[in-house]
Structure formats: structure tokens, C-alpha cells
Amino acid sequence: MFNDRTTPLSLLATRRSGKPRDLVAPGPDAAELETILTIAARTPDHGKLAPWRFVVVAPEQRAKLAEVITTAYRAERPQAGATELASLVQFAEQAPTLVVVLSSPKTESHIPLWEQEMSAGAACMNLLHAAHALGYAGGWLTGWPSYSSAVRDAFGADPERIAGFMFLGTPSRQLDERPRSILENIVTKWNH
Image (cartoon, rainbow, N blue to C red; front, side, top):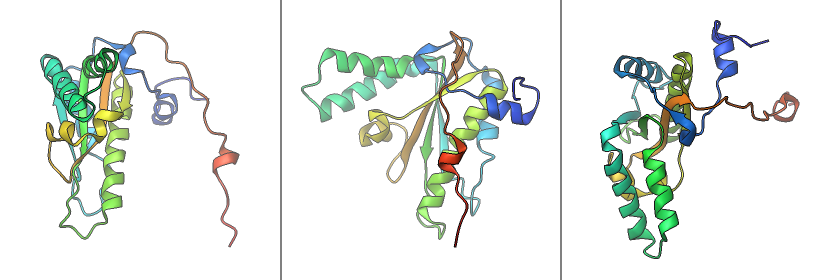
């Protein structure tokens, strides 16, 4: 039914997450990344607040990111072993393109914080759809680095939070379809 990528619905129906460790070059070039970010910013946004920001981490900055993440992890968990630290370095260095999306709420606004946070999540999803439309795959990761204030501080400041590390690139292998929810299990009719 949705086996080509020529219609908008086909694009939406065929998007798959790629494991960032399996995403290789090429990643989006500068013009493509600008297109991806422009589309990501076209997200529902009550009050026109833009309660999110995008931080592009260049390939030559990945070692510094790994240092930020491992330093923060060691400060929180001084007993961390080499395997744990190596996995954090790998986290920072995977996939050719990395965009860190920050939920950047405007606390002075009357718009509820929850709506602003959902808008940041929608921006992440739009980013993944745009990357897919250009022929790339993306992986949206959080994990420990997303919840670390010290890692967040490398990108912004409280009350901002990392909504996700968006890794983009070309899949090194065919992306498998994963089991999806059966609609009858997640859709009900309101009976009141």
C-alpha cells in the first residue's frame, strides 16, 4: 500500500528509525541540513514561541562532546568502569550528522509548559521525517546524557532540557520493519 516514496503518505508510512551506530556517510550536506532544520521548525507551536532549539555538533566536535559526556558521567559515578565510559564515547561519535534538540520553554509565557514540551517533541519528529524525505535515516536517542544537567549545560541552561540527540546518516544495511501497534489495541471510541 505504501511501498514507494513518491507520495507524502508513503514517506510517512515508510520512515524507519536507524540505529545511530549503523548510520554511515554520507550524511546530509550543509544545504540539506538547513532544509531539514527548516522543516523541523515547521511544527505546531501554540503562541509562536519556538520553545526548542537545534544545536548542530560538527564531526570535528565529536571528541569534545565525548569528553563532556564522560566527564559528567565520572562526576556522577566515580566508580564507572572502562566499558561504561567507552559506550559513552561511542554514543558521541556515531553517525555522520548530529543535531541536539533542546526543549527551550519560555517560562514567562502563559502557554502551558506541557504544550511547549510537546512542541519540542514534534520538532524532533519533523526533523526525522525531513531527513527521511531526503533519503537519510535518523535515530532519536536520549539515554543518560539527555538527563544530565552537566551535559545539558554544554548546550544551554536551565530550564532547557535535551529533548534528544538526533543522529542522521545513510543506513549501512536495510532497515527492518519493527512490529507496530495494532490499531484496535490503541484506538477506542468515546462512549460517554
